[in-house]
Amino acid sequence: MGHRLSKIYTRTGDKGDTGLGDGSRVAKDSLRIEAIGSADELNCTIGMILAHSLPDEVDTCLQGIQHDLFDLGSELCVPNYNKLSIEYVTRLEETLDDFNTDLPMLKEFILPAGGKATSACHLARAICRRAERRAITLNRDEALSPYVISYLNRLSDLLFVIARVLARHENGREVLWQPGRHSEDD
Image: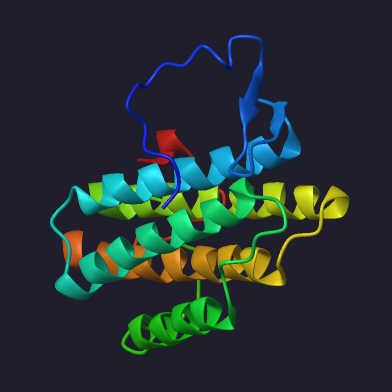
């Protein structure tokens, strides 16, 4: 394990730069820090989902994903370091297939709404898509492991499916999009 923080404020970033895991310093608004920040925001949002009463299998899955996201973050934080592997992506695909098995086929678009955990899961999915976009942008300038982007791509799909599971758990159903409906139509 790397350095442990004994003091939270260091003042080293007061001029707008921050340290990476390899000791180098970059601007706080660099592409790499944008990617790290989006992954961190995603992990925080998953923590918000976990604060709700969830089915055991969803709770266990999301806890594992939080650990995966720290592994992904370590890869982003240390240039040329590879932590993720195909096994991370395969695990998400298998989990996605397991959760999707009992769900009805989608015939309509669903709204990112429902119960509190469902809505938080939809928010996590949207943040995951942003994290994926930030990783793709970073990858144009600095090569990343292909598993970072694949992992985020699969994770956003899994979060969509988990939101569907949570909609049934919390609300009994999903909120379907009704084209052309306006608030005054209620």
